[in-house]
Length: 420
Image (tube, rainbow, N blue to C red; front, side, top):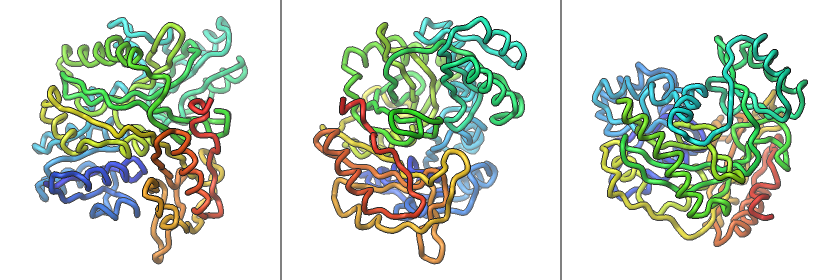
């Protein structure tokens, strides 16, 4: 079976590893891939934005399944284009991907289907948004309505912060036609909940907790994610039941009834409040870095699960997990997510991976004259498994000590909530 993975991050490295370990014989290609993915796949020098070349390659090489990792090609309609060429795709359609690309689209579905979520107002005029701000108390949340690589959400403790965030969004930083939502601030603990959806049927996966802020204690600017761990102690079976009944099932049902079925992985960002779980946002792909932690615990065959998803056969799929914990720490270049230093030489990965419970996934790396270079904002994802979160955490931080590059930065408190 021929598989094509689209993407070049740590998430795609983790997916490539799991597909490689599948019991279904396969040949993996990656566009564009990275030095870590090269261990499992043939990497092709094609941009993930180049839909025409991706479609031509897939048809010419009789690709059986395309797995799209990042949100941008999905939201730009790559799935639809591949399906026109009769290529099976693990990713939703462009229409269904509005669950991530349009905050207002998701809010509308939530309100129409009584899905618990924060109260909000949508604005496409800067002066109207600033005027509305005057009537509110802080803290409030301001979100760019569109894709912003995880950096378009502002939790504002003061009116000054809020007006600066509004001005930043309307400056066109994230999109040419800016709009935003101003949202009620929800108190609670944030978790990432994942489920496979085949259009109609749903299979929940394990949950994880991401650490979006740059600095320890969840301070500083938002990033694409600085670390994650699984399982999350706060998500009890009772709460998981509520999430499925009140949030995931009504969303999937609404999309199905609208003749725009959702297929792929659905990632719900949730706030567990005193009232119960509430929807913060949807993403239409696997989380990064949550996937790196989650897939280390997967006992079932990921490729088989993905094929069941695209073929509409999820109803009888059984998914099993190791009874362990897993934790990922992101090693970034200093200065990320703003102007970061890059191009340091990386050493020590082989040494770090000598422990069988450690896997280092590549994110922003490149090979130059046989040397590994730290080329991106998020560089490596050091992932460890253990019998407890505490054990996995200890192993991950021990492994990090062995990995060297001049501009290395990482948070030293991943899983602090679970530790408390």
